Image (cartoon, rainbow, N blue to C red; front, side, top):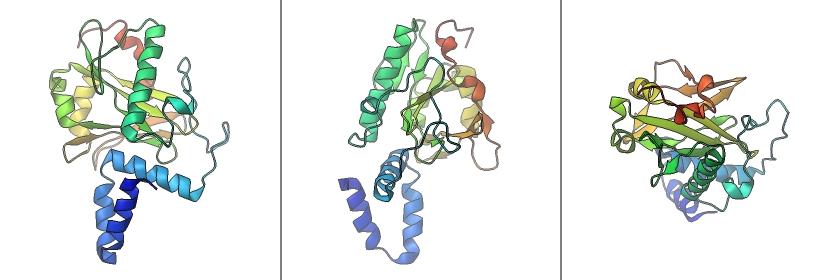
Length: 227
């Protein structure tokens, strides 16, 4: 058990029963906490790996995008931050091999040759066919997303090792930001696979956005038509 999970468990045990659910609900608003708790539960429950091709199996990698081995990111020994860093590095290296130079600019950020800022938040599969990449409003708006100058790549790894990239162009980012849920300064990206479609959850009362067309849509980094 990690120190974080052990500490949370001890703290929760000391609370009155009526308060436990409220505290857990608040904790799970944080994307990193969700990943740590989910991984702990998977290990404790002894959940077997999904069998590719079965109805409940995790998504397979998109055409041309490699299913990185466990050591590339889906390693229980890594913290969510370390896992994200490793996935991001592999993803950018893979794009470079395909003639799409997206240069790492520090942290979650990359940049195209013509100056487009690209945020690359990462997440591993928490619930079946669901990912929760995190991005703070400060991180997003410091690059002027309200002026349609930022693209976002939701880089998501399934339990099978398959890596999916949801490439949201600048104009789409600007349109969706007011409709996304936000909590404690964090913009919530809630990506789910439903059948053959990929849906991005919006704030309460707003229908999910179908982002299937943006899966693997890295062409915007090669030839970008306007903001």
